[in-house]
Length: 111
Image (cartoon, rainbow, N blue to C red; front, side, top):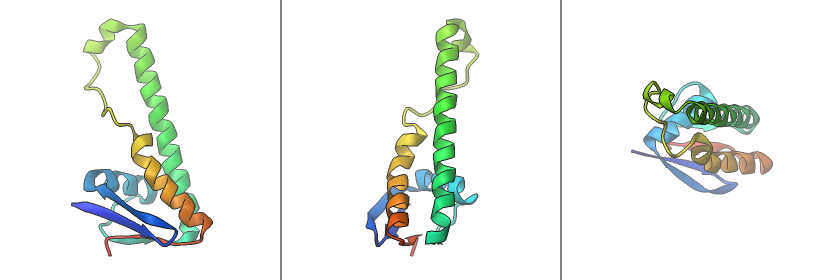
């Protein structure tokens, strides 16, 4: 299933379901198949997404430093995270949200 995010401020953003649901969970705390982010809620959504991206970057850096410092720890580490990090997945959504905020336009999906 695909999610299509729409705003009058920018072109449509189409994402795979798993990625869209992950971002919606970060921004809203749940992942509804249909919904709307009204202009007044966009700053909180942007802030939540940026916080999650910063946390993901810090965790990846910490994991890489730990593995570099102790090669034998690689056996104890769980499977490596996805090669595509959260900042790459979130960048198009952040662009859409910021542009929608600047042009005072809601973001809708699933309608």
